[in-house]
Image (cartoon, rainbow, N blue to C red; front, side, top):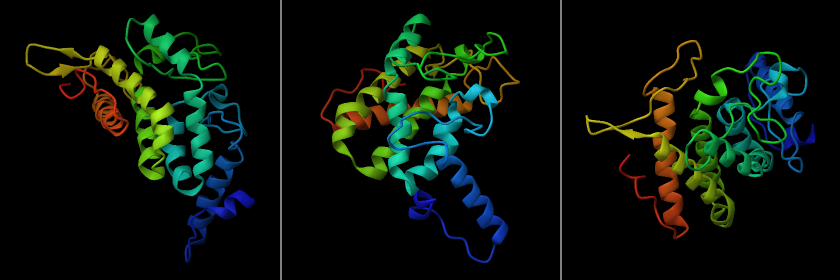
Length: 229
């Protein structure tokens, strides 16, 4: 309760809206701790939805309000990803790519756990690749809000670099003179495979720009193809 009182929006004149906002924030805060850097599941701690695995929902929907209202908890969510980068690098290698390919479903180890509980192996963990770009966007949000240049230098920039390397290795230059990312699963999981998914391409392009800006901010080299793709 104390954490929620320290950072939350105050809504006046609309009780149902205030109740929904405060209940949602309480539900999220009850599932995380700043000194316990583990990911958030779409079902939180109250249900076994998705077997408690972390998806893009964490960085895309749950993380942004925490970054503004509870920045220490938001940092813990990023630390969860950073501490499992080794598994994401291994996943990229297994699929023949460079850099960092985060798992679609992540648990304690950081390995891809999609299909390990009940549903069977499917294309999600292999093709729903926008998760890496979603994490890059979350990292960049943290840097722009916090201005923590030291953390950018020591931990965040290397991860942005790794995600950009993955995007570069995943992109193919075709006869039309443009780079393309083919055969992915977009957020609309009922329609796949898709070539040049707008969401996948958007976060991929953002990842390249963010990595280039982070490299310049930390006086490091910009990848050869990052600005061309």
